[in-house]
Image (cartoon, rainbow, N blue to C red; front, side):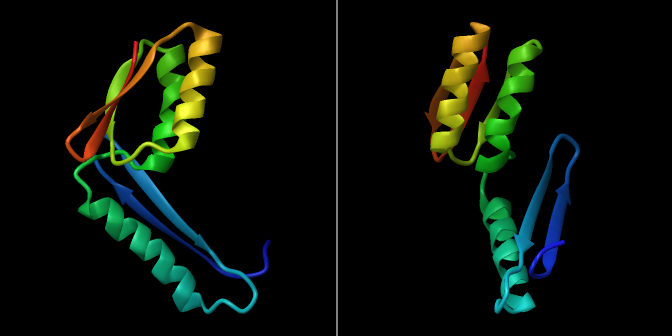
Length: 109
């Protein structure tokens, strides 16, 4: 329950699913809510990376608790960097973030 409507756009691929959500508010037309979610999806589709900045920080912990790994992200947020620091401190795993052109490689070792 909330003060407005909501829209969810799900893009499913073989190895990743991205979800974009717009939440309404009082006085905000449904068209504006949908347009914001659609714009986020358009930015993702135009990028050359399979992981957007909101999914990137969520992938770190399962990778650190599992066998590690890497992924290519569109951008790195302060939240991803702080998650990486906390994960390194508590798990002893090393998280590296390296620019590769306009994309970022995030690796958990």
